[in-house]
Length: 461
Ligand code: TYD
Ligand code: MG
Image (cartoon, helix red, strand yellow):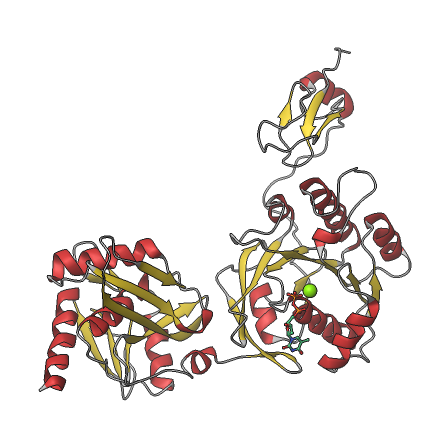
């Protein structure tokens, strides 16, 4: 056998070097490099790999397959994002800011499954048993037969889980507090989190339990520590929202067993999270209908239409470089809409400070919001409130044209259901209509701008 070269791996970022050093070149961490034995594994050459591996049987693409077996949680919103319930043998990462309600959401899901007769184990690494019990009492689920422990040592957790009947659902709150004694770095470091997550994912595959890992999110929106955990698990869900408001949005960002564009909407109440089956009503609840700069966007999240208010404020700027602040939308998309308004519609807007906000803490990523944003901007600039019963959707092209978007019919019907009588959009196919709704179709953004400005000057007279 060829002589093995040792390799050195940074325990903080995973960088591999051929030489030991006191400081990792890649991440700058001190004292994080450890010698690792790679004999027989990747990096040991094809000969060594042949010696240690046994051939397996290769199969064709067609043939028997198993449908994913799901355990529904009875929470319509959670099930929607999961794609119909927890998949047996899958690992799910639930990320979110501290205090957003991850533990609350999962304790409620755990209780619901336990009440259906499933074996559910809740391991809290952050809170003592007493604290979790207090929360359970507050949520009114203290009598649910959830098995609870407060523990962070992975080997202890696995030994506990392997005792008795295999659990159906395991919740680890949170993965950042877990540590394994196979590795010598502090809990919360990349290697600890990665190794712990690996062990738990393997446990899920082996026993058929659905394992939920709770992860904290850093300021820049990543799950703290390792992105690698995201690659290891079958689904990644983010729980987000403005902590000063009561609604929370659960969003799928990766799902091997379902769609990723679905959202679940919840409302944080005194007794836990309540589902919001009709989020449009909630997002429009606080709307100030008489104000200039407010436009209602008829959006679609996954398979569900969601109406949200887009607020714009255009104010003269004292600065050489005017300010742009965007919450809940893409700022480069705003720059594009502004450039189209300037060059294609002749609107002098670029020298103003511009603030744009999607009300209710929702993040909108559809290009279909372009038209609503443009309408809100023009309304604010000309100080002319938009009609209270109008909704907007359509994608603005660089040429100044308005392009139709998918699910027009769904958006129109949702608008009609909530009492909006005027839909402003691109030229549609003939089929997309709803009773009692007047549809104004525009080929170019300039037409809409002209209409809003004309309504504004009528008001002023
Ligand atoms: P928590 O689930 O502990 O958040 P995370 O696990 O994401 O850190 O929820 C924390 C917040 O939720 C806390 O500020 C209090 C609030 N809350 C309620 O408003 N009502 C409730 O019934 C519960 C349990 C929590
Ligand atoms: Mg928590």
